Amino acid sequence: MYQTNQYEGMLAETITMQGHKGDAINAYVARPLGAGPHPGMVVIHHAPGWDEWYRECTRRFAHHGYVAISPNLYFRDGHGTPEDVGAKVRAGGGIPDEQVLGDLDGANKLLRSLPYVSSKVGVFGTCSGGRHGFLAACRLKNFDALVECWGGRVVQSKEEVTPKQPVAPIDYTKDLPCPMIGLFGNDDKSPSPEQVNLHEAELKKHGKNYEFHRYDGAGHGFFYYDRPAYRQEQAVDGWKKLFAFCEKNLR
Amino acid sequence: MCTMIAHQAKIEGRGKSGEDWFEVREANVSYDHPYDMPLEHALNIDFVNETAGPSARVAVELSIEAARKLVQTIEAVLAQAEQRGVLEDRLQAASR
Image (tube, rainbow over the protein chains, first blue to last red):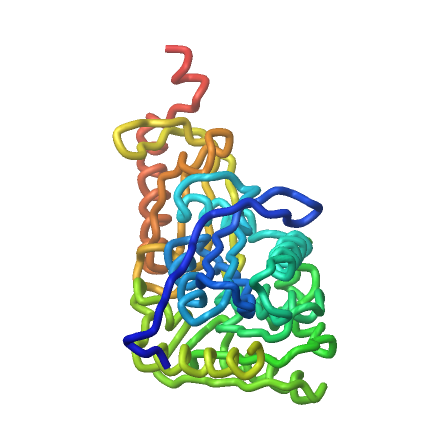
């Protein structure tokens, strides 16, 4: 808990980092001042884009003592407002999973190379970013904790499999090497409560370390204060639970 | 993006974004998260020109009912124009 006489400072800026196949992409980094070591957090933006909410989210993790990096997963799709770039990606059916994994691996490795980052790095994502987070935790096997918020299409039917997203992330559940927390709204359609049930059953089946919190009166994206989906009570509780989880597993 | 339901139609036309008109070459139609419409999912149409970058875009976000009404209205207008014999294709228009 913060005290009013506590010193606090933060540095936040856009940087260039190496992503998939060594591509240079940009990323937003926010970190607390001081030598650390601080745990790291890779913050995966949602489908609508690399937007203001995600910059604030990245700074929020820094405010709570994490060195946070949010790579621009849409870097290769050109530049403009986050909405315009996000709409372009939406029209193209999203971005390839392999490319996302390469970018997230690059972000993880960058954090681990920094002298003020501890040996613990987590991953956080909402919406498609929640799906990417689960995928990254299972496939890359180099994250120490996973925060998945309403990851859409973790459960994919055969009809939903595409060349860009060729495997349903749930199929990798057995490979999840780290603890995870999942936050979901019971009024969500993607993921639906039934899909969250399947997600949880698979985690249980493989004996994974997980906690799921499922909120009544909330749908998709209930953290987004700039959208009608925002649910104050559930969002406050969700943030509290996810930070408690991070403190337990990343400190 | 969580539905990933998106189709693209190659089209020809002009779109207005701000004060300027630009050549529209594609219509991207999706049923997915909108940016402004207060719905979880909407029928989104982006009229774009991919060669001009992501900012060359005229966007609309519609409810399902509105989208269906729009389709019916376009069809009705085209049918009426065809009935009157005033439909022109691009070559006829260009030959004037």
